View (cartoon, rainbow, N blue to C red):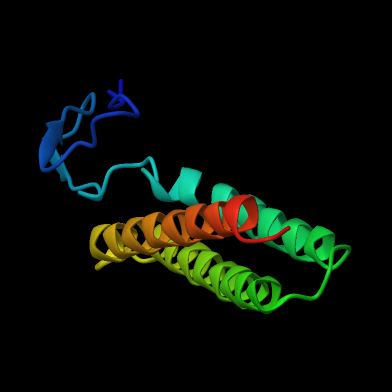
Length: 129
């Protein structure tokens, strides 16, 4: 009978005994089967793009002060930053060679997007009347 490896631990160069046959070497992929952090970054980045767009839309209901325009531009750039994070996350899930490197870049871009969103929130709270 065949032995199956658990999902959390990939098997590398493990010999599998087959009844009536000689030992066969089976090599499975060395990359873990779970996509890691990218599975969380992708949907959260998409949600944050929606948050930025919602705040932009609500922001147009107020007066058109100079700070209003600065915060609008900041939130528009922030939506693009979250879009880049989502794209990097998607690419890291599809890449077998550089997946972990791209995933770490997606994480850094996502954190930068959260920082920009926090700056926008502070601007909305203190500078817009």
